[in-house]
Structure formats: C-alpha cells, structure tokens
Length: 424
Image 1 (tube, rainbow, N blue to C red):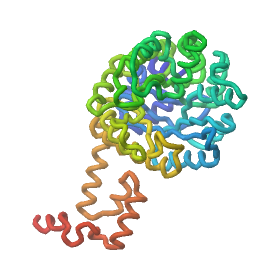
Image 2: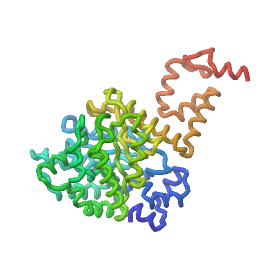
Image 3: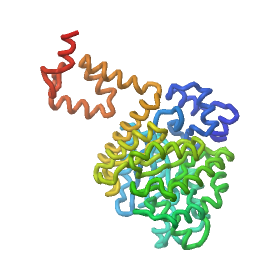
C-alpha cells in the first residue's frame, strides 16, 4: 500500500509517525491530511529515506537540484554536492544528470543519502538516445515507461512527469504568443515529439500505466509544469493555465489510483502575481501540495538568481507553496559549483523560514525569539547555533571582533542594546 492508501483507511504508518513528531502535529490530523491529498510523504518502499511531509500544515520544504551534464560530468563532484545538501539542510535532492553513466550515478546517489530523491525520467531517455547517436524523436512509449519502472525499482522517491502537455494544452500554447516560449527541457522534448509524430503525449495517453508503476513502489508523482513561464512577461498566460487545468484532472486520477501526487508551479512570475498564482493552483488542483521553482520575480539578476528566488519563494510560501526548489547563483548560466549549491540552499531555507513564520508553523517564531533573546544577552553561541549558517556567523564575528564577547565591530561601546540595558 502507498502512504495515501494507508491514510485513506485510517492507518498510521511509521513514516507518518516520524513526520507528525517532527512537525509537531497530531497524528490523527496528519492522517486526515494525507487521506485528503493535502500532504504527501515521498517514500519509495524499495529504499529507506528520511520521511518528509510536504503540504498543508507542514513546514515549507526545500529541494536541491544536482547532477551531471554532457559538458560537465564529474560523478565524484556530484556526490560532494549531495553531502553538502544534507549538511546545509535541504530536505530533498533531484538528480537531473544528463551526462555519463546515468544508472550508476543514480544508484550511487540513492546509496549515499537519506534525503528523499527525485528524478525526471525523460531526461534519462533523451540522454541515453543521444549517447546512441539518436534524437529524442526516436523514442517510443515503451522506452519511457521502462525507464520509469527501472527508476522506481531502484528506489526513487518522487518523479517529475510532464503529463499536463496534451493535445488540448499544446493547442492552447500554439495559439499563444510568448516572449521566451518553452524553458522546460522535458516540455520542449515532448512538444517536439508530439508535433513530429502527430501523436498524443504517452505520459497523458497512458497515464493509468504510469499510475500502476507508482502505486506498486509508492513513488510520489510530481506533475511537472512543462509549460511554465521562463520570462516574467509570459506568466499567467493561456499556455500556463491550460496545462494547470489538465494537471488538476490528473491529480484526481492519481488519488483514485491511491498514488501520492504534488503539482509543480511557475518559474518566472511578477511579484504582484505570485499570490494569485499560488491560490489558483490550490483551487484547480484541489489543494494538492505545490512545488515551485523560485519563483523568480525578475529576469534582471543573472548571477544573483538565488536572491531573486528567495524573494519570490518567501512570498510564494506565505501564500501556500509547500515545496521550494532552490535556485543557485549559477541559474541560467552554468552547472552549479559546490559553493553555488550552498548559496542556493541557504537562500531557499531563508525563504522557507519566512514562509513558516507567515503560516504559523509550530516552533518557527520561537527560533527568531530565541535569537533575539540571545542578542540581548550577547549570547553568541546561541546566536550561532540557531542561525541558518552557523559557520559563517561564527567566522564573521571572530574575524572582526576577536574574542570580545560583549560587543561586535559595528557599534563597539556604542551598542544600542548595552545602552538600553543601562536605562532599564
């Protein structure tokens, strides 16, 4: 049985018990939320991962994308990034590798982390065809479903599938006018294939086949936004909304089949439209957990898109997004380095925490209050330990103030807190 089907009959799984304890939520309430499809616990039954609850009443979670490319393939470096993801507090990792021995890379990642792990199976299909000197247009449905089955057997916890691109949503896209077109790799590959073959997207046409695989292994489906806007001028257009309507239909089919499901959301959205986008997704997809890339509220910040994403992600999380996919300083430019991965995770964690404060998640405000209390007492160790990056906080303080425990180099003896205490 899947986590969803267990919850539907009122059963409490070991994973649910761990999530309830970690989130500070009553077990019976968590079971009801999973049964309603408002929370998912990605947990492939073929491997042991650290259970994470994503969705309503949960703290906001973050995902880190890593993986090789055909231009930059260093499996050892990707394992280093994997360890960094755990160290700096990511809740999930997606292996988006497109270069090298993809099966071997994925197996090593699964064996070397307790974080839940996701993939985009069509990337593997396209990459394997390319290694054989073939184009994506050569793929057949069986090849894609065989890849999905293989990854499910290996233990992948959640998979992104661009099943919302069908003949109807593609027709809407072709009538639309976009500044940047399609920026999703999976979406662009499927569009080419559908137009060349004049056939329906196999992920949509054979969706029941996909559901059988996911149900057998308890793979959580992440319904990908293949038509997501990649420029803020393209946000909230007919293309995006048409796909979202189809995704709402597929959410219902997932639940009917006992399969856990979440929905992926837009990438580039003007700040003024982020709140409305979050609410529209929840409405059309019956409150399924929402997984967003960023979103990025400007296209202006190449090299600093982790900051852009943190700004958009904080608002998105406050308005209902449940799962933030990090964005690194390398976004739109190159494969991320180790430091890029760190910076992306830290920025996303800040955004998630701001969302937790807005959502009233248990314990979120207590962290801020404890830091404020520690600042009043000049309790630097507590400040370090509770901060998003304790190593950086400790280093910056020691570099500038040495061992002085009663002041920092900003104010010195003119410290406002110390003067205020003298007036108390």
